[in-house]
Figure 1 (cartoon, one colour):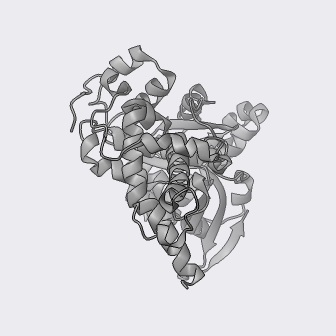
Figure 2 (spheres, rainbow over the protein chains, first blue to last red):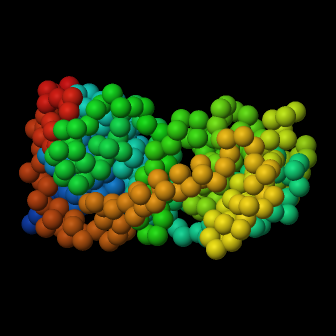
Length: 265
Length: 113
């Protein structure tokens, strides 16, 4: 008798990898064991392809349903879900497309996929109140230099070599004139994705602004982030992000220490 | 040393601008006050306003085609019959040619990779 863990492992492997190991555990009764398992396998595959299609709608439009389903099937057999929540499936699809030989003719596909994922994450992220700028007023200059911001859960940053935001909009709007007008040389693009008032919002940032924003969202102390960003109008970036609710909280490390002194939620 | 001072003052000014934007009725008054005198070069309300206008222009971006409903709801594929439909999909008959809108993108190509 296999243990439950062995049984689960065999069934999972048999369903995804299509080998016969799972069928040995299934009773054949009028309907053969392999045929019974095929029902589960097909349901799982259809569910996972649907999950990917919902997360990557622009990719789906770009390559068409048949190619998308074929590519998704190759992907899901190599990288089945690790989470029971299908909303988490799967950020690795963009990296997969980047290296997928059959999609090599579409150099911007992985970039569009990353934007698709960022938008999907923005839409599914939990709600969080924006940081009230008034809470920052009590900090002295030394504390302001060390401040670390916490980004809103819906905030995502995408960098792509091609104008994937224009492609994304044109394809999802089915605007053929806009598709024809796209200049693939109009890149790279530096994008900020955020949910505001219930909808996703995609903004193009200047490269230095994007790098500063990425540093701040990664929790880098303000002084370090500004120095690393180079020539950037830090005031405008900070004010715009505070107004737009890009941050939800902050922490200030003790001078020379690593423990946050304060966390404002 | 100048940069160290700047990081802190940048945040101070940004806080002021953000607070002013939260209370538009006090902005006009505020811009004439000493608050704006402390602005570093290149940092002013006009820049922030430009950014805001740009953001507002793109505001309420419609997420075409996105179904924000949790995928575990899975109306499609929840039934075994829906699963059976995919049985015809033979992995060997892989579609090598993208058949979607990529051909309509300028500079796009329809050749298999």
